[in-house]
Image 1 (cartoon, rainbow, N blue to C red):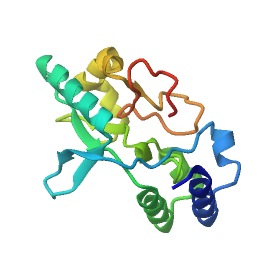
Image 2 (cartoon, rainbow, N blue to C red):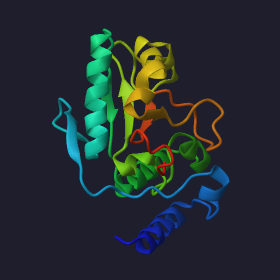
Image 3 (cartoon, one colour):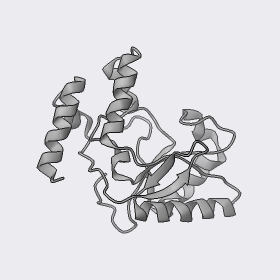
Length: 184
């Protein structure tokens, strides 16, 4: 899909959800393209496949191996997420009674989630509930804070980030090493 067509599709979806036209500008977010080629990085017990782009999957695997050598277990909880799936998440939360403002503090609008790129990972570890701030108290988070950048992973949403998204110590984005200016 060409960039103009993609942008128009995203504008139609976000308008339909009631997201203001200035959402990206006020949040400092950029349009995130959906990745074309994916590989399976983990299969959950229910058979659901967690997928990443090829470079991210390789970096993830290397990082998991390095962490294991330091007796730290990293678990992939989420990877690629399509624009349509992101829309469904937001629609579900709105139908459950959450306000749009509440939802957008936790989930980026469709088209603006790093998960669309196949380069974002949500990370967990045994003994810690998934996707909670308490993850920052784990050995896994301490290891990531020290070593993730070696593998090209950066914390996307630190405390008081300019994007209006809650602190997510579990959400990391892969940039190819040596390409620090790559689009997020």
